[in-house]
Length: 261
Image (cartoon, one colour):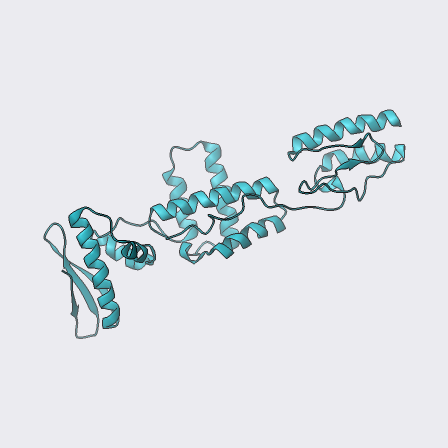
């Protein structure tokens, strides 16, 4: 059983006897008796789970997951829980990347890129438990506003889910705010194709002007963000989502335009 002691200056301490029969103390500071009693009950539950070898009940597990870095450090110091990784965004991601010695160099670079996107939006000192599902969705939309490609957003969201899934395993947070984040961000861009394949535009513009074609304000196919039709160059075409496939299709139609000219 755990007990509460009160010092003359008003500070309270929870004391308990661990599985090794040694008495240990958790200093709470100047807190109310009601709060000290609540901590005492949770400490008793943790001690009982250690002695019996069973997992703590759901309520105690949620309480542990919601603790800040200071209180979790006090519990870890007396052996009631494993030492928790930093719950600050940048430090946590750095610790995770350093821990993953099993990944390839390219994967490590990708994780660092996702870290840059997260830190740029949420700031380096953001607490993991302060990031909500709404914040995660806003982060995905923000990346789209910054001009990120659809696949880039999807992969960054996947890596963010991976990072926060590990935070759950470390009992830093109770739920993953990126769990229900959509894997794809559908964005339809209107206007010319020059924003997607700028290297081909000078040649394409010259050929179309010579053939009497138009290269501006083409119709856009739903969900692709690229033209669905090629004016005066063979009619409707189907363009893939990757840059390579778009480039190949445009090159073929440039050849058609030259033949028409």
